[in-house]
Amino acid sequence: MKKNVVVIGGGVAGALLAKLLQNDAHVTLIDPRDAHNVDVTYSDQSYQCASPLDDTPAAASSGMFHNAIDPSLVDAYDKIKSSKAILIVGGGPTGVELAGEIATQFPDKKITLVNRGSRLLSFIGPKASQKSLEWLISKKVEVLLNQTVNLKSSSKDVYETSEGETIVADAYFTCTGKPLSSSWLNDTILKPCLNTDETLAVDTCLRVVGYKNVFAIGDITNVPELKQGYLAMEHATLTAKNIKLLFRGEDEEKLGAYKASKPLAFVSLGKKDGVAQINGFTIHGCLVGVIKSKDLFVGKTRKSFGLQS
Image (cartoon, rainbow, N blue to C red; front, side):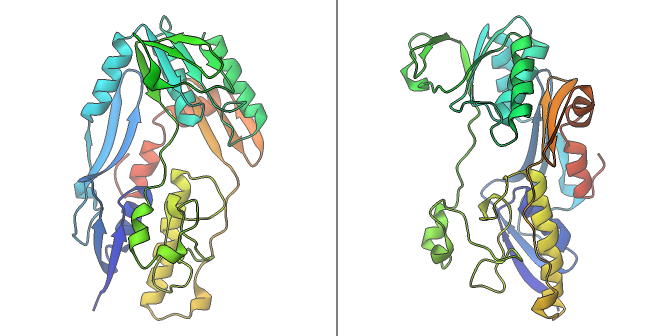
């Protein structure tokens, strides 16, 4: 008789885990959304890989995926196209890539990027940050570092930074990331396992500390590494293997252990350039652009779900 597995959260990690276990267990995938989306937005086109989320065992089967255009992405593109000046808040990978795409596709638009920190892409080395900064400046993007901007205090599309600089923009995009949505766990038995930063404490096998049959994967874990999609997929792959071992009644000593990964990043700069950091080494130029900008790794993600790229 097949065991029952409940997966809470249909993001990259949860959807892949459901896919990997669908032939070995009765899988129930729970998520407030009706689809698992992998959004990819270029300046002139948008793609979305989506699968309905429901409580069927094959929650991530290939028949559930389709290409579609999210209306919100179309609205964002229309806003970019109709604007003369654009403000981007946040100098992480999303903000840098968005600025690069707009600057490449619409070179006549005024683009201002405001970043709270002292350098762009602070999660990787300073050399990669500097290369990205130089590239954006070469595309006439104005980059303001060590500053914040109050988007609620605008008057007729005029914004003021924390240093008193004035920015005129008829459109803005906030690219500062999203907080963890784990506060609901305070009302569950897992409350004692929540850290002050709302991550869950896990052991080396990605099991929630104190539990033998409850796993945590993806951004919610307290694993000391960057929160990146490909790492969440590695969490899912290892967890699927460990759950199958438990199903077979194997000793816990045989469970696989997860080792935190070093920072790895590919950041596209327009359609033909990019910057990457691999094992501490910085690479930049068209090679990175070819690797990342081709499809922003959507093809690789689809392949992981057993789909045609």
